[in-house]
Amino acid sequence: MSADIGARFLETARRLGSRPALIHRGVATSFAELGAQVERLAHGFLRAGLAPQERAAVLVAPSREFFAAPLALMRAGA
Image (cartoon, rainbow, N blue to C red; front, side, top):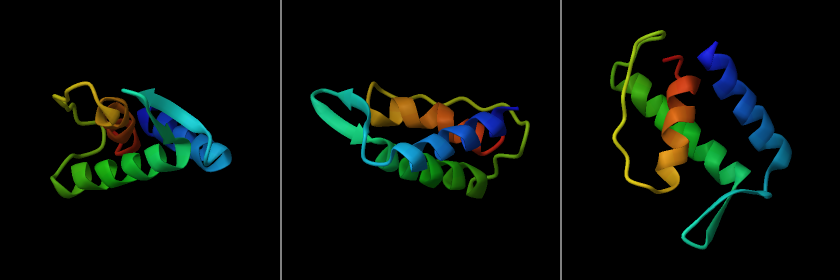
């Protein structure tokens, strides 16, 4: 189910493209940028050995990554 959420987010990111997905410290990040970051992180988690349905935790300071990391974990199937 979590992989479905990750895939649905990426579909939304493709559809909304340049629209702002979030604003952090006055800097806007588009859906396309956030989607690309989610994909990079998800592939990194998989290369690091994260297996589908495996539990994972990520420690992230408030930043763009704070929003991208949980989506990337879901995209990777965790």
